[in-house]
Amino acid sequence: MKLMNAEGGELMTVSSLERDGGSLLIKGKVFGAMPMTARLDAEAARAALKLLTPGLLWFLLTLPFRRSKS
Image (cartoon, rainbow, N blue to C red; front, side, top):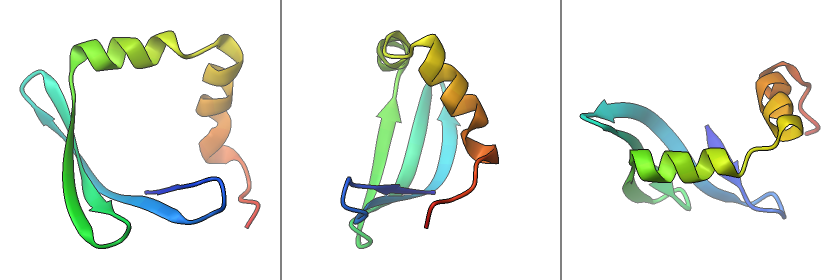
């Protein structure tokens, strides 16, 4: 999975998602070169869920089935 900036440049390539006890480890490379492991804990996950609106949740659920614009 690739995360892009607003101009279409690559910010991060996520290579794996793994469970580590009560956290989620996100492994990948930043800017295509620098390896990184990020940890998402329960508190951060709850904070992320608070950002979701019903419309945004529906968009996220249907996103994998949409056509790519590029």
